[in-house]
Every structure is written in structure tokens, then in C-alpha cells.
Image (cartoon, rainbow, N blue to C red; front, side, top):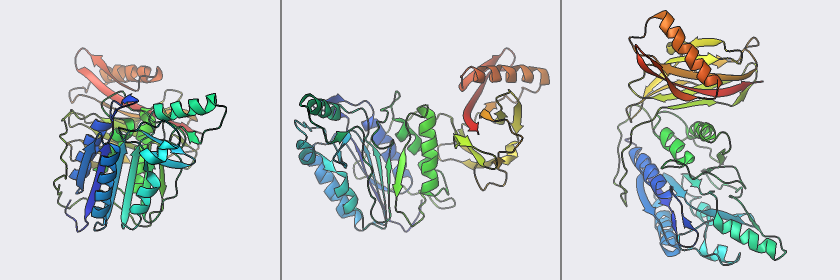
Length: 393
């Protein structure tokens, strides 16, 4: 995007640890995030599998670069841990033979936030709370010695200086998923939303949180800590997209786009709004619906949705707070777990009786917990659908 802003980003993915073994996804997470940040106008330095010296040098160089920038972003994927309430990011050659080695061999998050405090806008994204053998070993050693360790699982809450946003992939003192696919749930969700036009970053991160919770059955909930007073948009519509050269290019394997459905918040009361966002491929002309606990199927007209063409060729269908047509919970709406979703009927599926049969099968599948699937018609082939729950209190 053409902008007078100078945007710089440092992306680090540490996966090939020498002592505790290999993490599956940090390198591919770094590749994914570096690609999407470059696509919205960031000059990206993307680095993977860094030793302590290399990581320190990379951060020092980036801090010098950020002094002349309007916006600075850091994304880190890999191991991290906390000691006595302070967070440290772990290079691949960390050994951590004792608790005292944490501060010597790790990279202090407090030092990084302090170094970026004077940048007009700064953002740090930490996908660094994965199951951590470092922390487990040190806590076990302390327990066997009959003493209390200052180490806890996950990362600790911090105070953010300046106009800064810090996002943790999961809540403090808990661990995040490395992901069963080639990317973590947090990296996947973040990459899906960064390119969305005209969404302020605080709203964007709410959508990321909703997607991560949906992908992990609510076991992982990202947390944002912010002192930001300035609105920031990764992407503004109507402006030319510019993609500066990356300082350290990382090739990104192309993969087919997947449909993504998000419904939030998970619990609502009468008078509150439910939001739905669906990023769908061009092959789907969706029919949206609400399914009540009593199996009442209510169509939602397509004209209720704001439609936005995304850079990846998908179309976003969205109803969010403040939309012309909102999904406001009414007193007569059935309480309990409802489902919002869509299905992709073929253009030739016009026979009312056949459509009823297809919808009955979709409803039956959703009721048995199959929220992503297809039903097959002998005449019309596979009909794809997705649905997500929300609870009316």
C-alpha cells in the first residue's frame, strides 16, 4: 500500500533447538508472516534458527533501523519462558543448565520493548508459549531439590511502554499450540487478517483471537496488552499496494486457500450483537443461516453482509457491530447454543424438495458435531458447509 509511513518488521522463527529438539512450525510461521507483512508495505527482515549471538545482532540492527521508522513490528515464533515475572525469548543454542542461565542465554522481552518505546507505533507478536522442555526441566530440578522455582509455564504479563501493542499467542502462564498443520493456529489466524482493508488493529486482533479460539476448541486464547493511543491500519482500501524488498528474503510455498469462518463473541445476551466473518473462495456463492438449539433453520439474506474482495482472490462476507444490518439478539431468540454458518449450493440446485433434503442432512451433521463438511447429492454433487457455535445466555 502506498503510504508516507516508513514501516519496518523483524520476523524470527526459531525451531531447530540444539538441546531440546525441533519445533515443527516456527520456520514456516516466520515465512508466512514475513510474506503477509511485506505485502502490506513493511520492509521485512526475516531470519530463522538464530543462535544467541545472531539473535542479539539481529535485534540490535533492527532497533537502529526502527529509530527512523513510523511503524515497527516484531514477530517471534519459538521457545520462550518466564523467570520471576520477566520474559525471555530463547535462541536455538540455549542450554539453560540452571535458572541463572536464563538471563544470560535468553533475550529479554523487557529490553526489546524498552528499545522500541520511542517508535511512533510499535507492535510485538509473540507466538512463543509452546510446550517448553526448558521450563519443565528447570521446574522439575527445583522441585526435586525441595525449593520453589521462579519459573512458570508460558509467558508473564508485561507493562507496555509508549504507543505499543504486545500480543501473546495465548493467556499468561499457559502454553500455545505448535499446530498440527504447517503453521500454528496463531500464525494462521494473524496471516488471514493482516491484509483485510480498513480494519483498525485492535479490532483485527479481536478477530484473530476468535479464530484461534475456534481452531483450538477455546483451549488457546491470545491476549493483547496495549497502551496505543493512535489508530493503526495494516491496509487501507483505495491505495496502491507496495511490497518493498525484504532484507532477508524467505521463500514461501504457495498453498490452496482455505475457507475461514469466524463467529464472535462466544457468549451473548439479549440486546447484544453477534458478528460473523467468512472468507470464501470464488467457487462458493454462500447461503447463510442460523440454527437454533431446537433445530430452527433461519436463512440470513446475503444483502445483510458487507462484501470485500481480498488480495488472495477470496471474498470476505461480514456482519459486525455497526453494520447496516446487525445480528442483534432478541428476547424471543432461543437460549442456549446456536450455530451460525453457510453452505455453498450449486447454481443448478433449484428444486425445493432436493434443497430441503440437503439442508436436513447439513443440520443433522452439525447436530452431531461436524461443523466443517460436505453433503452429497446424486444430482448436484458435493455441497460444502461450515458452522460455528455461539451461546445465548
